[in-house]
Length: 311
Image (cartoon, rainbow, N blue to C red; front, top):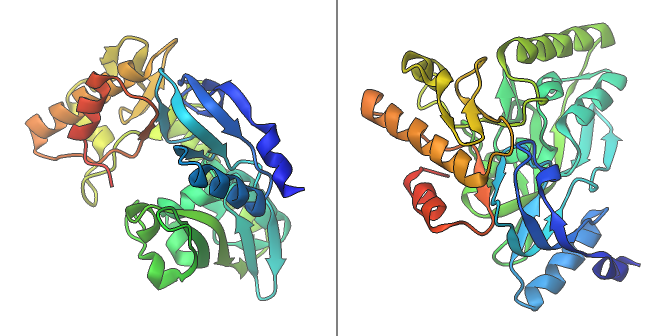
C-alpha cells in the first residue's frame, strides 16, 4: 500500500553518497518513493505536519551542507518509469537518469536526446535546467511536462511554451515547481547514427571535463553571455591552481570544482566565493551559480550564498 512508505523512513541518513560531490551531512529523515503516487503521498503527509522538505534527484548539481539537512529529504531516483508512445514520443518520470534515457532511446531508434548520455543528472533536472549540448537541447524536443506547484500542491500540465525554456532556465525553476514527468517528441533514426552521436558526446566529456572519479558537481557557474566561457576567464586568472581546504579547481576545466579529499561544504562555498569575486573584479560579470546549496548552512555559508546570483 502507498501508505506503507511512511513506515520506511530512514533516520539520520547520510547524504554524501547521494551527491556527485560526495559532500553532505545527515538527513533528519529520508524517504525513497518508487512512483509519483508515493512521492505525492509522502509530501502531502509531511506538509500537513509542517515538516520542512528537501527533494533530491541524482544530486549531480548539489552542494549539501556538511552540517546536514533538517526535516525530511525525499529522493526521486527510484521514480524512473517510462512509456514509449505513438509517433516517436516517450513519457518519462522525473527520476530517471539522463544517461539511462539516452540508452532507452538508442534501443528504440529514437533521436534527439543523444547528448544526455554524458549528463549525470535526472530527467527532471535536465528539464528544469533546460540542458543542452552541441546543437541538441531539451527545448528542441520537449512537448509537455507534469509539474507540482510546491507552494499550492497543485499538479499542472505545462506545454512547451508554458515551460518558458531559456539558457539554463525554465518557468519551473523560477517559480518553485517540481517536474513529475515529461513527454518528448523525437525522430526515428538509424541506430548506428544515434550510437555515433552518443559516442561523440561521451568522448568530448572525457577529453574536456573531469571524470566522476574526481567528485564534482558539473559546471560551477553559468556562462555570463554567448561565447563568453567562465572556464576560459578563470584560466586567464590562473585559477586551476586555486584550492580551499579539500576543494580545488579541475586542471582539466577551471569551471569544475572538485572534492580533492574530505572537502566540506564550507570549503566549496569559499572557493566558489573566490571564483565569483575574481571574475567580477577582473571582467565585470556577476556570475549565476549552477550548483544549488541545500541544508543547514553556517553563518559564513549563508553570507556567501546570498552574494551569488541564483535563479
